[in-house]
Image (cartoon, helix red, strand yellow):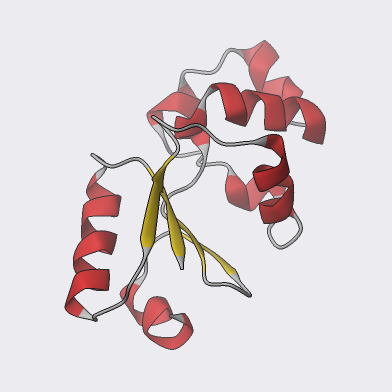
Length: 113
């Protein structure tokens, strides 16, 4: 299992704690420091919508210019923007092998991880 996100994020800290308390082995990919590829985002988009993948409640999204926000209507432009501004990707994002999970919800994770 791979968990993607940004290390020093409050939600990520809760997710890491849940994983440790439940004895779940995982690999962490900090896309703030290691980046993310177009291919990886396309893989996520094969299971989740662009709207689901973008963290619209985060500071990075709120700081986007109106011009940048209009780019989100074009999938390729939105992917370019997510590669450039990885903080706008919802987190945590978990690849369980057969499923992509977004956000941290302990009850949901109990059933899917």
